[in-house]
Image 1: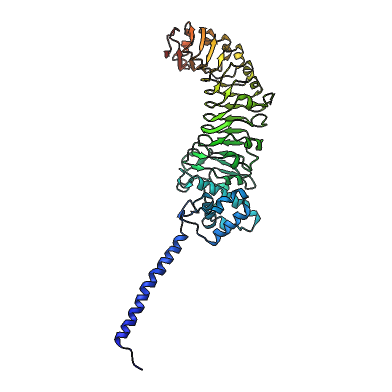
Image 2: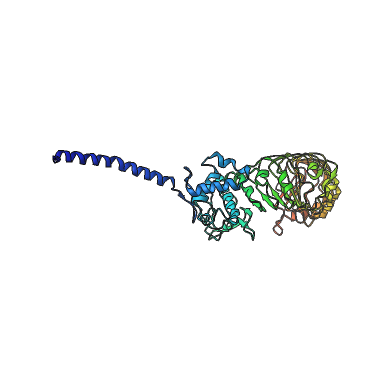
Length: 480
């Protein structure tokens, strides 16, 4: 047999080396790609927030998806089936599967763990839907540094910041007005740079009693998000970007609801229904919204049968589109202490029945379009601390009976009306006054020495005093 030549040996070695040079980079690239598909950004303590590039496709991820498909109600399946990897739902599923260390020890086959997995899925969807990585605190980038854990921590979700649970481990509160100790001081939860729309997955939290999320840029479809709650007692979502109509269904489904504060959501509109006859409602605050309709529709049924409101204490509708007159049925709100109807589209007189509400501490109907006179029955409101009748078309004299408010009335706004006659002597006895504005009326006379004495170094109570220019006053701030 002929021995291989030296040239043939070198030719063979070169061929082998060429194959090695080609194959090794391919293998390295393939390995790097595989590693990259399962890599993730580090998140809060004890957990990882998933990469937004794509789901890992891991066995655990597919198992979580199967679990969610089998467990979630049909109305929550759509986002899962669409397969948008950037959706809050799929981000939450990937977090559960690949990054939530607590879920790893929970068996998807054990019924007693289903509720906790669904709670964590619901809160994780909330986190991703509202940009949790960009929250100012207790999110993905800033820890709470206190006794409560940041969101997406690998601890029981009942220990996450602003979350509270009952003895059965069911979430009862998402309360971003609660306070968290950050090692130096208490942090309030509002204004946390939350942006987005509260996902419908919150409806999985059927034991929810308190939902407080204010002063952010958050939208909520209230009737859909809380369609399964029946135990709500407090709903605060003021200062956000809510739209749609007033959540009538939510009121009807939650007979224990005591507080509703949706102020500062200008795109919230429609009539305020569902209030009449509600057995528990104590506070309804809708300032600076576009809700409309009439007070009569709000507190009466079919315009003929009035419903006794046993508990309503606070009704704020300032700067809304509410119209019509103040109905005589207002007298049935017997426990009302705060009534703010300022800057609405109301008209007509002040009904005498309004002055049957002897628990009133604040009555604001300024800048409305009301007319008529101030009834002598104003003397019944002996708990009143603020009375604002400014910028209307009230006429006649200011009744001397207002003296009955001498120990409580602090702020009295009567300016920009059509009042006539002399400045009432009763002003001398309103010793708690801090603000008195009566300018732009046809009043005459003078501000007495007794009133001016309240502005002296001894008392310093009457901080603001403005009168018509035809009224003599030696101690006023200005005249108009």
